Amino acid sequence: MELDAESASPAGLEAELRRFAGSRPAGSRLPTTRALVSRYSASPVTVQRVIRGLVSEGLVETRPGAGNFVARRTAVRHADFAWQTTALGPARTPPNPVGATLQATPEGSVALHSGYPMEDLLPARLVRSAMARAARGGAAVERVDPAGLPALRRWFAGELTRSRADAAPVSAEDVLITPGGQSALASVFRALAGPGDAVVMESPTYWGAIAAARQAGLRIIPVARGARAPLASDLEEALATSGARIFYAQPHFANPTGTLWNAEDRAAVMDLMRARGTYLVEDDWARDFCIDADPAPLAADDPDGHVVYIRSLTKSVSPAVRVAALVARGPARARLQTDRTVDDLYVSGLLQATAVDVLSSAGWDSHRSRLRTELRTRRDELARQISTHLGPDALTLLPRGGLNLWVQLPDGTDTGALAARARAAGVLVAPGADWFPTESAGAFLRLNFAGAPPHQFGPALRTVASVLDGGTSAAGEAMP
Image (cartoon, rainbow, N blue to C red; front, side, top):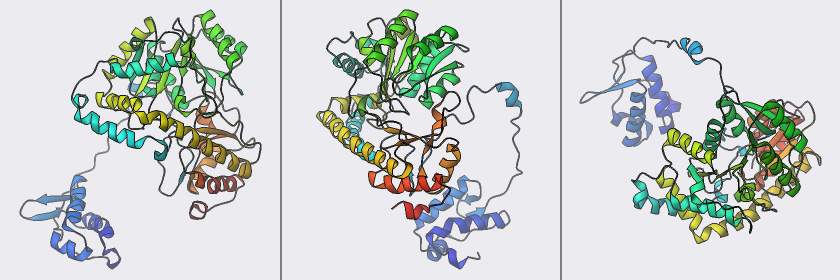
């Protein structure tokens, strides 16, 4: 075997063996493990791991007692998928409905695009201990009730009734446990509407709700959301002209704008829901991310079941604990239960038991208190850096909760191209167009203040400003 002198290291082992296998005839014998260990200063375990990887790719074959050889090549057959175009018919969602928020963060980059808090903002110690205890108990092997663990359902119900002294009664029987808030949204749009039906949504709003509604075959009717809630007159017209029976909204710390309905907004919307016999799907995504305000859910003031309530623990407890609650009353609850059972049968009892353990621990409330303080510090620091580098008018609002800041750039800015250039410079941001169910109303970015440490905000915003101005910024210089 002829070796490149520069590749004589463990790091060069795989590349050199791959080159060897690609350039030699089938049946050519690879050097022995002993020879490779000596040549690359690698352990026998490392050599065998590399060879197993090449075997799994079909580049190398192992013959017991004889050694390792270049594998025999077979003729490449190109699959013909053209028939699926006709079979599938029109697409219900864009080819990539996920948008920017779930992009992986390259090493050394700053994540201002993420929808999740970084690990130091999570109750990691509580989660690890709870998972270990759950794994030792019956939850590791038992099938659970399709509606969810009774203790977890009671906790979610109790959270609603404790939110205000005169809250409408909510029982554990009204609560369904789902594998995350996204799954709950998909069930709502499937169970409470049919393909071709309309659903009214604020614009901008959560991209996942937009994608789920389109996947369910619904027509999205957008209503503009300003500094607070949509105008009651706009909402009434959208419901009346479309015939929609569902209004999806995030009344508290909306994603992406951070806006919050006030008492007048809440009363006007609920009066309209009752007058028209319409469901309000209340996505209470930021319940655990209150900073300067702690509003009660609308579901706490809804005795007649107009509000279908969703609250997830995925962002606040752990991305690994994909557990959420879907609260509904009356016949709607039965339809949602049927959809959940058909879709998933039940949610992992191990994850549910972990969630119950964390939420009932003495450390949960103290964690939330510390989290509020930390989020306030990060929010204010990112807002300061936005004002410094993008201008005092760039920030549309200082939200009283949530994880995000909504930034407006000069008209005509191509935010998609800006995000691509910023990514190349080591900063990930989310273009605002992902959150509009119709055409974007301006050039916006959503920046998350919980996905990166605060000391990176200044360098990251300098990079964004440089890219916006048409300049360049080396990732190594910008990101300490």
